[in-house]
Image (cartoon, rainbow over all chains, first blue to last red; front, top):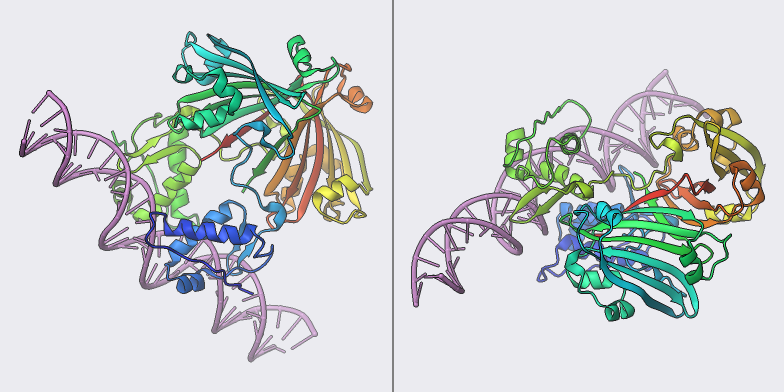
Length: 246
Length: 246
DNA sequence: CACGTCAGTTTGTGCGCACATGCTGACGTC
DNA sequence: GACGTCAGCATGTGCGCACAAACTGACGTG
């Protein structure tokens, strides 16, 4: 019990000590070096062994606790959480949707690419209603099998994004390259029968529904980055969400 | 600028000082006493004014930063985040689904309540396949208008829950009363045409889809608490999710 | 006037210490 | 043998201090 983990701290990098420690502990847990339920070395001993202060070690451990990897109980100690509780730091991928494993041959076709005004998108992003927005409609497929119709509206700052860029790269990758990466987003998920357009693009019969998702993304300063209105073939798609309520 | 917020700290309650401070600051922000973008009093001054140490004040502010209410930048100071970024601490309600405002007359009818074995539910919860589970099927309505069919499977520890309790109280409220409150859950959201049963209960035509959500919840120790398979009238329901990626 | 520099401000990182609180297990008493 | 008590242990809360790093704005020099 109280397994000691091999950790090496480098005091000559600009990376904070607590973060170096947290990353190495996380690696030890996710690699399976520590099994769920196994006791963790206590703070004092670890601080002593590594030549760090207790607050620094506490901060590293706290990082992993808030990621759900560790459980701490006063008087008892710190233990590795059950594997089912392990979760990635991110919640639902804000990144592009088709990076799920096993997607054989992802393709993107740009159906439309024009500057318009749109009251729904402008309202959601909180910009004036007559703001010119770049409207992009893409069809996502796996090989010849259509999967989703993605409609997005972007503020003027991004209106120079080209069709070529969209074909080769995901929208979120493009946005991140321009610095303003999204931090917070609302998402609303629903379902409805497909429109005629959607039915044609997605090769659907009238009885097959589409799963819809609308979302708005902002950067850290609160500036709008994107408004999106996507619809997916419900047969092929489902959305994973992870929650925690503490 | 650097508006001072009226805060009262009580050192005679068991509530930690940093949490008292965080709650009162949160109230000041959400009540609109501080406007988005407005500068915040700096840590040192606030600590001095309130008779607290800087670490304590930092911890309170950090709580609000991780909730997305505040933005801090080194050398600049702390400012109130844009209103669009404000978000509740919880992500998606794990609590019962029909507490959304404006729901006039919520009713719950228990359609089925029996002990069964179910391989899907047992697998999702990670218990032996022959574990006897309490299976509950409920119909949620608003007045005479049906909204959702809720199917849940519970481990043996909860098999003494009665039909009466379910009619008057939400399932999650019951589970919380028994101590083991859920901490982490997976959720999977999809859509499909309704089954014959669902069509009858929800008064749907064949072309109208249902929005489906399956989820598994665990308590802090990793023990399974609930497996649920819910379907909602897509016309009346949509699911709100909030994300943040830092 | 343009540019670099430097002081001042504010948050970030890291250390030390002390005491409180919740839990476990062993000991001792009735 | 059942029960309360108490010591030991690990985390929780709270304080003090020092220095680093990022940003702003003013000042000064060419």
